[in-house]
Image 1 (cartoon, helix red, strand yellow):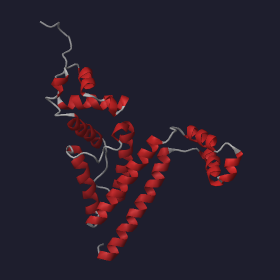
Image 2 (image 1 turned 30 degrees about the horizontal axis):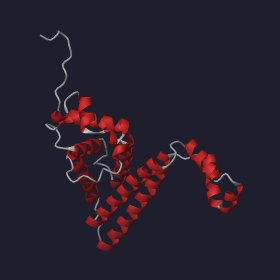
Image 3 (image 1 turned 90 degrees about the horizontal axis):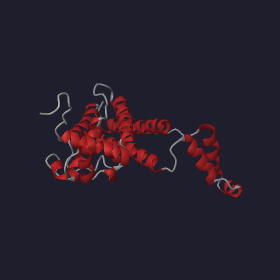
Image 4 (image 1 turned 60 degrees about the vertical axis):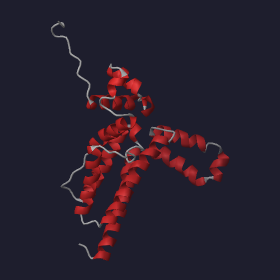
Length: 227
């Protein structure tokens, strides 16, 4: 008989397998997620995992679904407020799960959170009287901006405003380069004054995208006679 008070290990489930995989990816990147590593972390033999996930692609589908499930935005607000909150929430989720950047729209067998998310975005735009193709273009523009800005942030060779200033100063350090590339030198000077904040720049660019979508919506309304 097991010792009284001893903790029983929770039985393995699909949700638990996926949660462990997400934790591994958050810590060590997607390359750290293998069925063998997942089994070791779950304290089971690798074959036990296949009762809960069919293969690596099925696991990735479920992991991406976790990220979509963390994105929050209102359904009762106007379209611009909803899309702004969605963009900020998506960025926050992907900064927590950087391995998912580039995977979010790649799944051919999306999970329920993924499907619910995409359906809700279209619902908000269509209910705001966006014609179908205008809604599609607005959606594509938003995703291109959100995912593109995060890919850029992830690939830039600096992480903090201070590092950005240092890197820019090193690039343009020789006086001859400053003279040959005066506008790049100006970037260095202004970065030294103000720094570079990824969140602030994201919000600023987001305003430009939303302004462009609103202008497109108004142009389509004038063409079709919609309100």
